[in-house]
Length: 409
Ligand code: ADP
Ligand code: MG
Image (tube, rainbow, N blue to C red; front, side, top):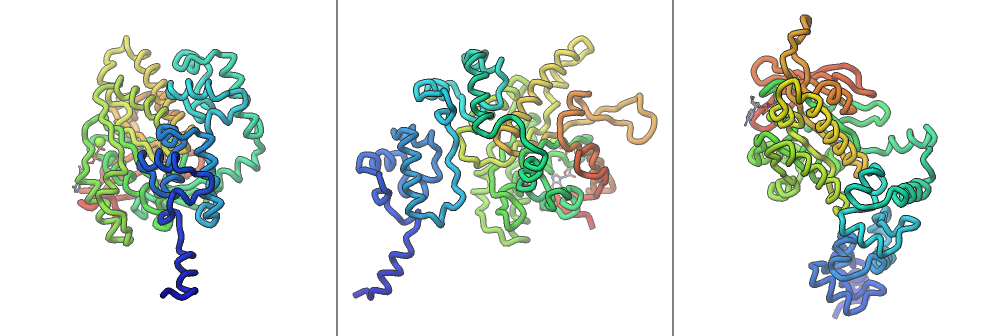
């Protein structure tokens, strides 16, 4: 017979994974059945689902929220920082019927906040009047359009970064105001350089390092890879991940690392733009799982499809729109965007390196941080910060090896 102490211990070991759904306050047998059918079997899975998932399972969003509050009341220590996702219903003036019909069109809270009014009308059928009203309501709920510089500084201090998985690169990307190194959440990066300079290799490695847990320099999130040139290689991911696992003791299985990279092949610039727009929509239905979006390369299709002087203005306009969507993805979901870009010979430049990045002015002003990669001896590469509001114009050397990108000896 179990002693009282043993029983107590058993009691104590209850956690969101080993607790039954029916033990959640307010959860009746009908809801248990609906959730189980949808593959949600315990409180932990209920917390990890999105309100959308719960709605699809047959529970209202209000019910979903209430049940989650119930789970938190059972396990307050497990979810100290849980923030319920914001729904369209949370916006003043948006009723359940409007919310539902907007959601069916692909709209979500974050998108409604960041999409230009004109586009809300043309793509989602929201009248300009309503759009302005909703956006004002969102701004009001966040304390208005203005914040003090102090508030901005405090907010920026809590933004996260993730490692390159190579010390020399991390040192180059040291952000003084954060006291941290690497790629920063919510910011945009452009890596430009010639063919084989290592741009795609860098993108591959970041898809792995973003997944590292915080204690190993990552942010524990998934990556999205939009490949325009067909050069993505899962084998390279495995090689890079294996090195990082061996060096750090990271225990995430290789299959899961691969599984947490969503890949899309864009075969022309229209597809590329379509994928970006789709992302803007679908990321709102994910539970803040993604930390990085790669577009490798962002300019190649535009450059190939719009050749000849006459079409240059068209090209720049389309590219500009695509780039603005990428910015919106970063802003809306606070994730990092990394794009690569090619260089072209610039006969007008007589001094230094006679190459400039493709994409002209529009590209030149897009990224928060622009970096130039050039080949050096053998597998060595030099990377230089070209333009950044916070990083100095320094450079460093890295090496491309079978095991990925490492600090150069
Ligand atoms: P790009 O800038 O054109 O995207 P890549 O990122 O594809 O260039 O880099 C290509 C270079 O990466 C190759 O020239 C080679 O030096 C290196 N590389 C690629 N795969 C491997 C590997 N398995 N082992 C070692 N080096 C590799
Ligand atoms: Mg490449």
